[in-house]
Image (cartoon, rainbow, N blue to C red; front, side):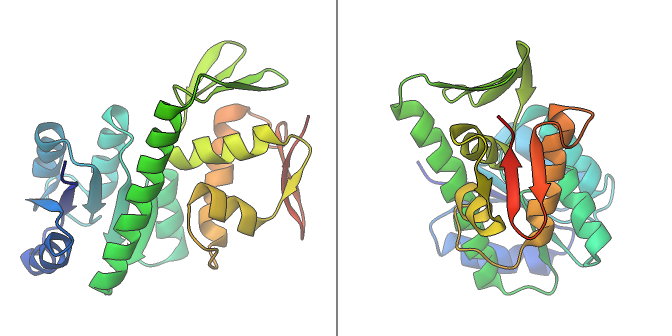
Length: 229
């Protein structure tokens, strides 16, 4: 079945450019030029991944992303002219899986799409072929079949990146993992300078686990991160 990509941007030239490169990879491309039509396209076309601009009429991209996240865990890549660190961190915090600044190289966008789809599909494939397994650390239980984390029996929904990080930590509690190890396992790519991505993702994960940010995952300055046994 062909991969479905939704390109949501109010600039038709950008949509046309991305369509050209994505269709060259045999992807099926849907387009949306504003916030409301983006939400409608997600519900009607069920895309496998969404490329989302922030500054769109009707409903801005950040609000659109929050609405998508209520209904779907598909990878979302923000493509935006807002390049400040605060904007990038906000986008990642609200649920984006990646953030590409404008102007961009369309070949890089295609590479990022492939990376996100590979990680997302590999997660599903790994779960579907394996028998049910539960990883347990203290009061946390990670169900590798449903990709759901439980704390004291209460379900905590995880994004694909969060699931991979928890799987890494919970398979080896007490072990220190470097940023490179975490990035390559959770993102499925060779390590690049991506401190913000790791920092934001760890922060989001800690918030889901407990009000005390260091209760489960500790930072070891200059070394990396560790889940306490």
